[in-house]
Image (cartoon, rainbow, N blue to C red; front, side):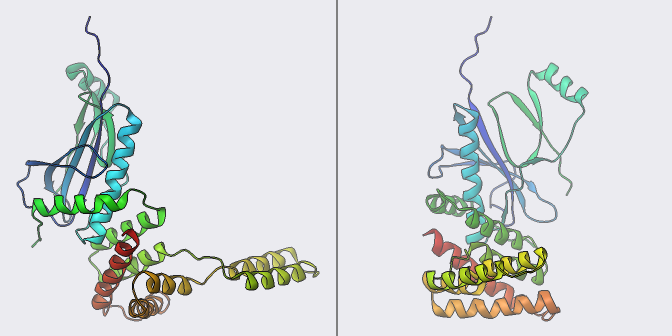
Length: 303
């Protein structure tokens, strides 16, 4: 009887990159990303409607949890590289792209001894040499040299050890904006990416104390319960900085007053577009400026 040795697990991330690598489809290269074991990059076919499929594989993990954590870290690195260096990387949501019947799964298992897995856009963790992955893809671009791509992964891998949820959201929104063809959509997503980075901190203690006194006064009034709740929520909101105060402070702290004023002007344009429809068809330059400011802010926060 064959004795099975220790299990080895793999982490596999399949993603879309808007700026394809300058190596042939089916070719591979190896890269070492800080904090991760050596990874193999496999170049896939063109992605619809634009970009290219890339698979990065890492193996040798003793547990499934270790593989998952490393794969998640890899996803963070890819997200930051795609956003800050403007390559446009969509790491997906780790969901299967196909489904097969139980009969097909059983037939594959009987023939190969392996478990059938359907192709995934995102992270897949599995036992090494124990699965068969099956998928299909329905079908003027710019490219990036493979060594330049590897250099960016290595450079930004050091800065993504402890990404906050806000930083992850910011990077995801910036990447999303690179896949959107319309300037209006790009603009809104890029302004929203800056919003995602901004915490609305508490205002000073003196103002909080004054608001607390007002809350106590209102609580003693004979008002309808719904009215009381509306006033309570409004006063609670006043204990926080406004969004404008938050993004102005962040730009001034990490970049400069000029950056803060430039983004403030863009935010007014965003409000005019969203609330009044003004500026539609005239936002290409604003979308580019919003990308510049959002990338600079995210990069400054990570360094």
